[in-house]
Image 1 (cartoon, rainbow, N blue to C red):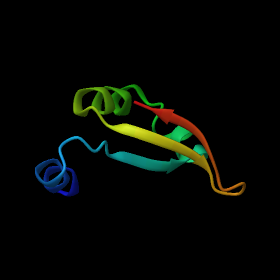
Image 2: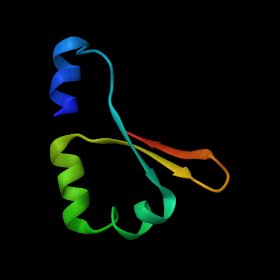
Image 3: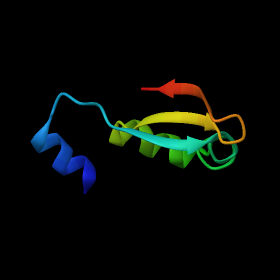
Image 4: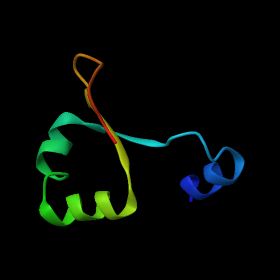
Amino acid sequence: MYRTFLKRINPERPLYLAIAQDIYQDFFQRPAIQEIITDQQINLIVFDPNLEEILQWIT
């Protein structure tokens, strides 16, 4: 829903889904999830919650 409204208000602004590194490595590496990310063109920010540091920007 947020993505739809953001696109109407500011279509040039990219939207990223921020996820912790352990969740990225466990859940987001599954083939079905990778397919959804690609199909839906979901941008990701992978971060380390302990270091409070961004590890990857995935577009």
